[in-house]
Image (cartoon, rainbow, N blue to C red):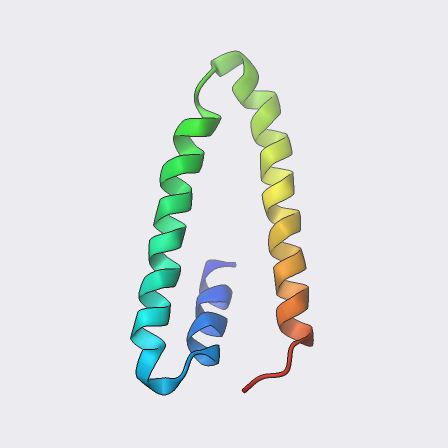
Length: 75
């Protein structure tokens, strides 16, 4: 999903701000990975069950965003 959402972020940005859009998109992905990875690893006993549910929520959230992007008109 990362390349597809990055493409949409750049495509929807004005031409003069496309580099900023890609940079912000990449920065937020790095921030999310930097927070989520340690958060899911805080306890080995809880990690296995929790990671399944959190991963499911993340995938469903990504699917919702993708569906909204497919329905939104392009500039």
